[in-house]
Image (tube, rainbow, N blue to C red):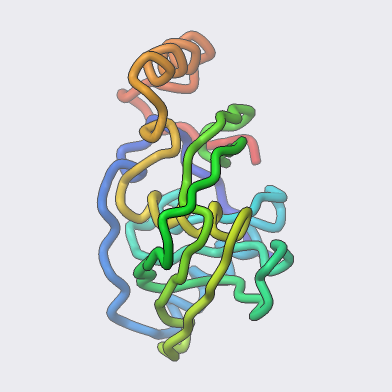
Length: 178
């Protein structure tokens, strides 16, 4: 089992737009397995490749999330569509910002199209927690953290708290204890 270190909030790789996957090969298979094993070890809902320091458009999700009828455990090159305007507002955390949970507004329903690690097209339709997870992980692929979805005052307080705790220092790369 390969459990890798998870990059934390101050790592520049988390702020880059990830590159599309073009090669569906053994290297991608290994990355998907590493994502899944690291996610399982950290007991999270989802984990994106940039959180492991790999700037590719792929993420793993917990196949046991409610509503995940396909038991999908990863998605490559996701494209999101929103069938309606309904929103949800609820607690959200991130393995790259350990111990921080903030109410975050997301769309309630999502249809995510992409590919499996074998290059087969796949679509997952989800609502609630599954939709939240898919949106959160896709944000990682776009260089967006869930703290970016907070109002500016809350962002400033959170960054100050993270700096005071030693979790935010642009001069060095840290890894989560997960």
